[in-house]
Image 1 (spheres, one colour):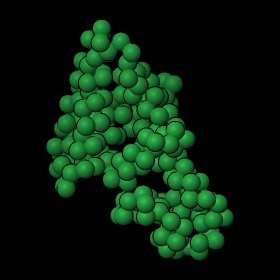
Image 2 (cartoon, one colour):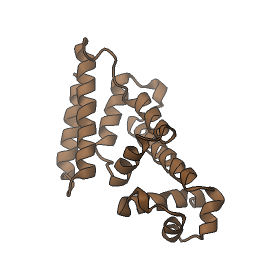
Image 3 (cartoon, one colour):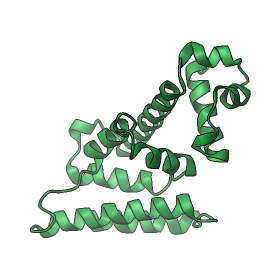
Image 4 (cartoon, helix red, strand yellow):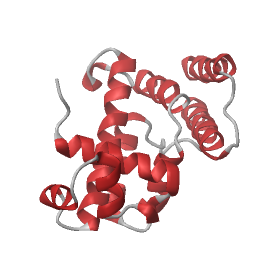
Amino acid sequence: MRPSNRDRILDAAVRVIQREGVTAVTFDSVAAEAELTRGGIMYHFPSREDLLAAIHQHLADRWEASLLADAGRPLDDLTADERLSAYIRVSTRSATRAELQLMLEAATHPEWAAPWSGVLERWAPVPADAGTDAASMARLVTRLAADGLWMFEALAYRDLPEAQRRAVAEHLVRAVAG
C-alpha cells in the first residue's frame, strides 16, 4: 500500500529533524524533502505548529505500534512486567536524535508532550511505591536504565554494537522478571 501524502510529509519532517534539528523544520524544507509543493504541505498542516504537533503524534503512534508488535499481544492482555519488558526491548533499539530533540521540545509544550506521555503511562509508568516496595523499585531502576541506554545512543557519536545492545536489553528484561 502506498503511504499517504500526510505520512510522507511527516516522515520527511522527521528526516529533516534527524539531519538538521527541529529549528530546520519549515514548509520549504519539508516540501523539498518530501518532493511536494509548499502548498501540498500546507493543505495537510495549515501552520508550523500543526505540523510539529502531528510529528509528535506520528512518532508516538509509531513507537506504540513497535511496543505492541514486540509484546505480541494487545496491551490489555499484558502484565505490567510484560509491558515494561517490551518497553525495554523497543527503547533500547530505536534511539534517534530526532526523537530525542522532539521530546526535549515537548518538555515546554504540553500539547506536544501528551502523545509521548500517553505511551509512557501505558507501557512504563513510574511506580508510586518504588520507595517502599522492592519489586517496584527494581522496575523503576530497569526503566531508568533503558531510558539511559536510549539517551546514550541518541547522544553518542557512535552506536553500541548490536549484540552488546541486545545483551544489555535482555539483562534488563531478566531483571524485571526478577
